[in-house]
Length: 364
View 1 (tube, rainbow, N blue to C red):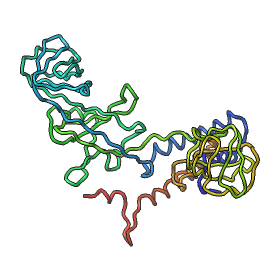
View 2: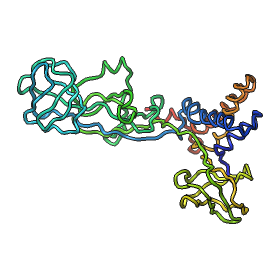
View 3: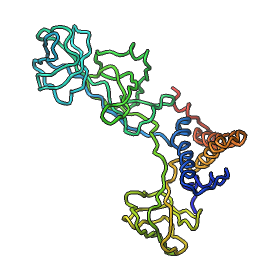
View 4: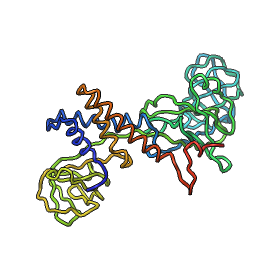
């Protein structure tokens, strides 16, 4: 037996608790959806737990202003002098001295390019300019920033981590500038890119040398699932599970939970996957089971202390569906109690007799 609550167990326990223990696929799918709603949306959407945090970085490119350029009004073509433009600059923003328009730059060669929109004025020879990239894609699993908790976006400077200031629409337009400086100052989120639909972030002002910007964020969790294709057999006192008609390699990972369905609550963690037909458990299976139905279920990527919150949440949603408002309130209260107790532990760090809260870590 294991301490974790696999997805399948959470679903089955919720169905039993609210007295809808049906084998109908539509009913089972309804309860799977409820547990996943709690797991992927409700709890992560309401609480910024430390264990949910992930980290990544983007590197802001240095602005480019070498040489000069020229162009003719109402055309898209510009010509550089002493420029070394590169294909990687396509999509960058272009600000031309004496012209208030911000153009989108498309590389042609080291000395030729096109802009969008077309030039609003003739650009005389030897006009200075600045090319810069202010928009970058976030991590593919980015869900939301840690705006409410430090450190959010930051960079290393002089041995310290320097946070950037988050901006909202009104502040962004006050702070945004094309005048370059040595270090970035502000950021805001800016929709999704058109290629991968990743969330984007913008920085201001442009900087004179490339700078790595790190950030912490809450990632998107993927919904929990189970795998039941084929059949399995076990041998008493052996960690190996042998499948028939299975594809463990593409559907099972270390940390998933395994059971033979004839023993509903006897779960074992998967240690490793050998191939499509064999996997290893973290403990010896106690009995020999001939080829029969089995379930391999994902385990919530939550601390064990919060697994029960998913059960309570599933019961709350189900009670509400059954028009049992009193029961729904009770289950929600139990859920909040579990979360509150966990947060009390998460937000305290003991050093001897001293207790430190999260806010104390960021006092200056």
